[in-house]
Amino acid sequence: MQFTDLKTQYAALKPGIDARIQRVLDHGQYIMGPEVKELETALAAFTGSKHCITVASGTEALLIALMALDLQPGDEVITTPFTFAATAEMIVLAGCMPVFVDVEPDTCNIDASLIEAKVTSRTRAIMPVSLYGQVADMAEINAIAARHGLAVIEDAAQSFGALYQGRRSCALSTFGATSFFPSKPLGCYGDGGALFTDDDALAQAAREIRVHGQSARYTHTRLGVGGRMDTLQCAVVLGKLERFEWELQRRAEIGARYQRLLADVPQVTVRPDRNSVYAQFTVMVDDRATVQAALQAAGVPTAVHYPKPLTLQPAYARYCCAECCPASSSLAARVLSLPMSADLSEADQDRVVAALHAALQ
Ligand SMILES: Cc1ncc(COP(=O)(O)O)c(C=O)c1O
Image (tube, rainbow, N blue to C red):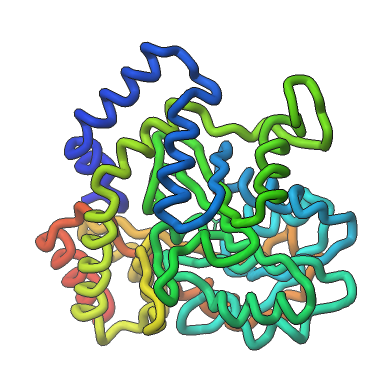
């Protein structure tokens, strides 16, 4: 059993993906080839966002969004410490100060009720993370942002395809930033990512920043980065879109089945006004190392997202005290992600559930 089954997915999509890759090899436009625009058009339509700008990775998407917003050194960006490091890392690399707000113990997403107390005269943006595939409380976050004139960047690296109050993740705020890392709900075969926005000026800024700040060839109107997503990776994502709706349906079914079969095990709560695309299906266990070892012995791969909140990581400790996000620290010690992908069979899922129940006895 694999933690994320990309081989079965490729076997199912092979003719389409191979043909698309071959087409790129035939036309030879490896950088900014026609597949880039084709993918951007498809993803903008899928999310309901006016603009989609593909970029080199989810990390680059976050950085480009911050740069497009023209944040200045010392500006503060409110975010969660219970995330992959890239979220806060890009805030720091953009010259800003990450301000950490703790998460809700049941959803693991930023606790919107704690945000407003952290807004200062230097706050410029809020960067919630839609962790494990479930969108954070965007309505509350957008309302706080509107009251204080802040931008909102949804780190949607794990939630592409998720629905929130009937709308898609990535199309819910100033910017949505996603990742096409291979194991993400929509992945490529290398690095890739995308930014989404309804704002014409921000979209134009992001397009320029992606190509070293060029508004025309060799006219560098602003500071940028080498942040393009290459044509081959765009072709792969286009190939993956062929059955993406089916995959979302399967993920929902497999997630619901895990919820049912593991009803006796503490697990991430999904709020009724949204769904999860289950980038991870995550439970909370005590004595995680023992449980993980027992599962491994039973042939069940697991992973921990994430073993430490950023508030406890040396590189970020100076932005926060170690004790100021207790829910994040407590969750980090207990979360355990189980095998999850659209091709996970019922038989394998039953093995996971049986092995976990046995380990918890
Ligand atoms: C929450 C979050 N943000 C950002 C990223 C960075 O994405 P990428 O690996 O495409 O740079 C990831 C990927 O792991 C992520 O999970």
